[in-house]
Length: 66
Image (cartoon, rainbow, N blue to C red; front, side, top):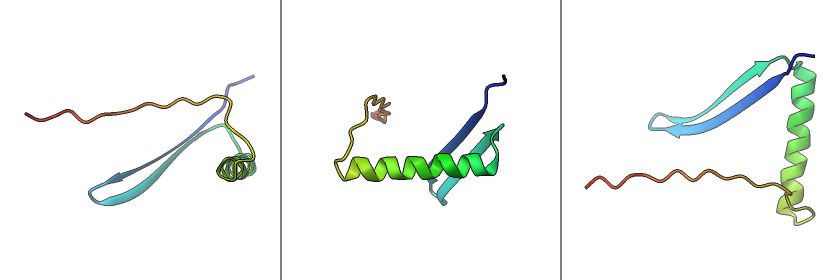
């Protein structure tokens, strides 16, 4: 079975906000299902109904220009 990937990234530049997506194998219906599930997951976390079991954060710090 081939491994499938879907990646979404968001950011902001001096020109404004952008969203990029890359799909490698999922159908539109599958992606909508995943996004709907994740939306509900985030709402449940905000409401305090659940807590994530795994949290990974990368902190990027700006260098001091001295």
